[in-house]
Image 1 (cartoon, one colour):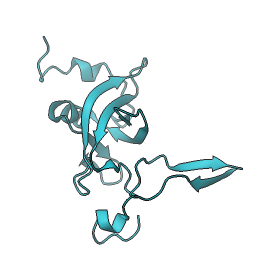
Image 2 (cartoon, helix red, strand yellow):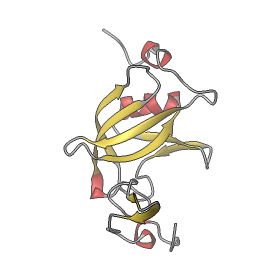
Image 3 (cartoon, one colour):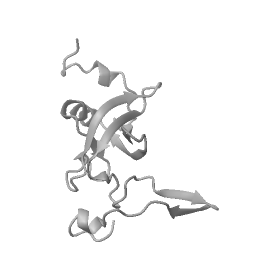
Image 4 (cartoon, helix red, strand yellow):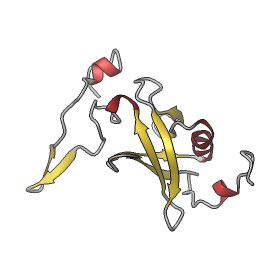
Length: 137
């Protein structure tokens, strides 16, 4: 039986040159893709240990516990990897029903039609209400 200190499961993944792996968050019930972010080894290990999604913020250069500012945490039901071990899939319960920092259910709200992008999902909560002091993101 493996212990939490065992890192073989982390070693078996295909990390990129920056030590990151793409992570897709998918709603565990609807199978909707909610978002894509990056994880480093520490983020993935913390996610597995805590049961809540932790990512690596490339723009901030630090760990990012999903929902730390908004309260919209992701409770992880399952962690998977693809056949090439170069992508991680998190099956999650999205707290508050909002995964996107724009206040939408999913980050994948832009749809291509007639070679133009348009917003196909409504804003459920204005970003200024989620992140006080930030009127637009």
